[in-house]
Length: 96
Image 1 (cartoon, rainbow, N blue to C red):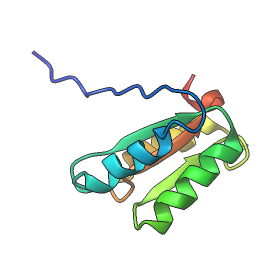
Image 2 (image 1 turned 90 degrees about the vertical axis):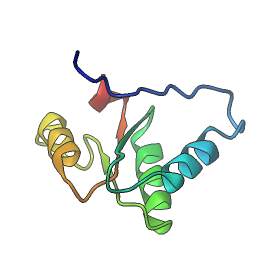
Image 3 (image 1 turned 135 degrees about the vertical axis):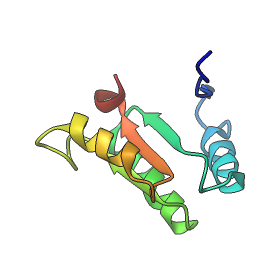
């Protein structure tokens, strides 16, 4: 049987601590074996998330139409295949 990748869905009202808990989970993970994709609604939020994680020494990259106007699909695939990248943050136009 094929191993399935765990999928965690975090939902809650604004200000409930979703970002904080997610960041702490990522910081506590093994950066060499665990990788994450964070989906957001807005490009600005994706960029903010990636910047904040980078400030915490977590390798993160935002992927959006703004950062990859030629095609987000290829940029997303490239980010996911980058062995040095632990977190890919993408807005809904990329992950849908």
